[in-house]
Picture 1: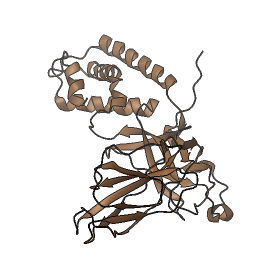
Picture 2 (picture 1 turned 120 degrees about the vertical axis):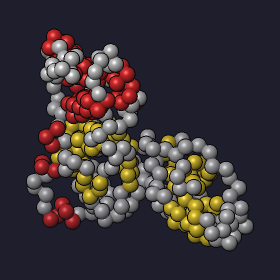
Picture 3 (picture 1 turned 90 degrees about the vertical axis):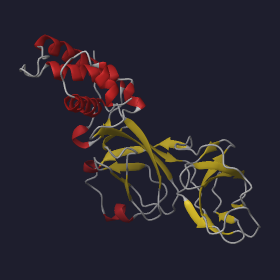
Picture 4 (picture 1 turned 30 degrees about the vertical axis):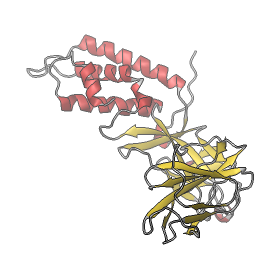
Length: 317
């Protein structure tokens, strides 16, 4: 669904320009998202040893992060492998001189996976094969390897060892994970609430962090500096569009609310020779419909942290 679908659904109102309709559709999306946090996305990353601060980046560059739900942060219970690549020793079918890309996950109980590692790239040597090696992950029963083109990571193989040689004989198949079941909820707080941070806190190192600190925009901090890399973290963020976007599936279900908002704003305009459609009675009706739908939606969604846009728990009789 995109803006044209919404425009088509309000085409019974004769006269408004495409530009005007787009402006009101974007206004509806921004209002709906900021007031209810209806648009969310799970962002995943792996920690880097010695790094405390991380940046969260939405998939759609035309959106901004406006908050994190109170239960929107999870930490991996099993770390992710961090492989390195080297020349293979077997005669393989990979193309020498071509760069290949790989990601590795750890398996627990034979079916649950960690988040994938950061992509490892390597130029294939004359042997036509590449070797990946990683440290054993405590609690892991095996590992999955994904690759090879660097754009679409498909499963190539599953092993129990901590080394694997790609000779090109395996055909990639099966999508890579974007989220993981091996996660547990951890705490979250606003940066403004961490006024007592001190030198000891800032310099302490541990892999036992149990809280993320959010600055209200797109930065987070760990409450300990990790000693090792590969600790998976998933953060559900609330988003708001900044310009015309393809309406994501999570918002498509609210298209009636979006249309009611657009009708409200159109009918509430000043009546002129060119704008002949405004009608106060219709404007009042669609305003009530939209606000009623928005309140019902807000009751169902999460609250959390996000500076001025924080959604607070609301109790209704």
